[in-house]
Amino acid sequence: MKSRKTMLLIFLLMAFAYLAVGCGGSETPPPPTNTPEPTVAPTPTTPPQPAVEPTEAAMPTTPPQADANTGQQHGQEHGQGHGQGHGQGQQGNMGQGMGGPGEGMRERHQAPIPAEYQGLTNPVPADEASLARGEQIYAEQCATCHGDGGMGDGPAGEALDPAPAPIAHSSQMLSDSYLFWRINEGGAQFGTAMLPYKDTLSEQEIWDVINYIRALGAGDVQPRQNVGGQAMDPAAEAQKHAEMLATGVEQGIITQEEADIFTEVHDKLNQYKETHMDEIRSFMGNPEEMQQYMLDAMVKAGEITQEQADAFVDIHDRLVEAGIMQ
Ligand code: HEC
Image (cartoon, rainbow, N blue to C red):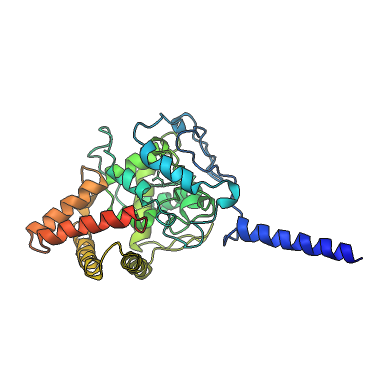
């Protein structure tokens, strides 16, 4: 009698321990998406939903420069199996940046846009018809990883490292050519789970989905309630931003004064983006070059000083290096 009870108790304890460790915070068990293995995993990660499976396109052409960053992330973050849900689930929706590796996104934003994509601009107007097509494509192909609202928090994304990008947000400051390239080619070049869509979607469909994710981020359309995930919320973004800076100050990576400079320049940068949308969309360089271009333009216009611009870049670098910001 007694030993049966003890056994039961032990069993229950083990079950709890397993749950506590294995599922850290996520209610839905991660779907069978393979975690991307930078150099090893050529097989296209099978997305849970997408109707058509991308095939050859996903074969990684072992990336020449991907190793420096991803290799290091890899060791730290890929703990085996039960390690998932750690670093990612808990702090929620920032996508990358939480477990440490803002580096990854940085690397992708610094990579040169391949010549054949440079200067591409969206020929499809973001009218109702395009947004409706984009919504359909998004729901079928993207939401499972990127979430209904495009904030990188779809159920199939939970187990991925790096996590799906918060594209509703980031597409506000990415050029047409960058977005088209990344959706067309996917993440093979960088060893990420982002799928290539060049064999699955037509060019027009890719532009439709770009129109849609931008509309999601701008709040022009309401997300479908389908797989789950947050909607873009500017107030929540500002809050998260303030928290990151506070963490930076707490950890002694930046001073309070630097945090204030950063916030001021960042706000002005956001205003600049809003009033120069066309410039951003047709920008020829990569996202990193675009940011530098905008800072230069703001200095020229007398909106910020050269010192502020330099400080902004320097502070950003340090926060990214510390794994606080992406
Ligand atoms: C299997 C999961 C998965 C699916 C499905 C998926 N993505 Fe991604 N996506 C990712 C991951 C992971 C990243 C981050 C790594 C990267 O940038 O390569 C990403 C990154 C991106 C980026 C780059 C954002 C940036 O800031 O650099 C864009 C744009 C994007 N996805 C769009 C889409 C669109 C549009 C679809 C649907 C047509 C889609 N994704 C489907 C996982 C996915």
